[in-house]
Image 1 (cartoon, rainbow, N blue to C red):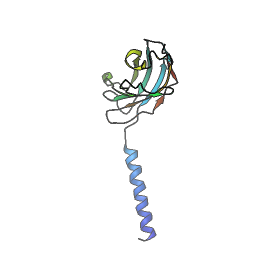
Image 2: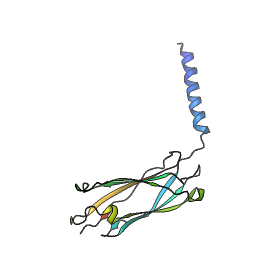
Image 3: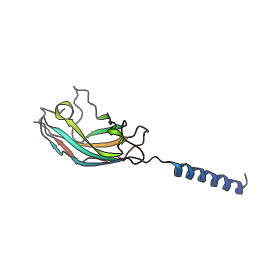
Image 4: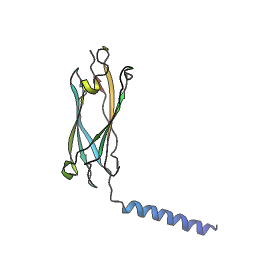
Length: 149
């Protein structure tokens, strides 16, 4: 192939990629962590407040993902431990911005080391997926201390 033909093919490839990205109206959702409980006493819960914005659509009917990362403990040997939670996002009436609260209970989820006398230290990663599988950026929480008497 002559060098001139290769240049034309390369130019057309770049032009078609630019046209495809330029014509896309989908924008990835924005998710921000407004507040989170940093120390969870026994039998209490961790509460996180999030704000979302998705000008290209809605997060409604998408999924919210929470990933627990243990920093000083391994999952208990006698329990089936799930570190990734997928939660359906309600429709919110089609709203493209708003806020929601995530509550994770000590009894149901956080207190797996209860009775060990060793506090658990965790970090959470959060992101949201639209129904069209567009993902927000991943948010990493500060360290969360779970008190285990």
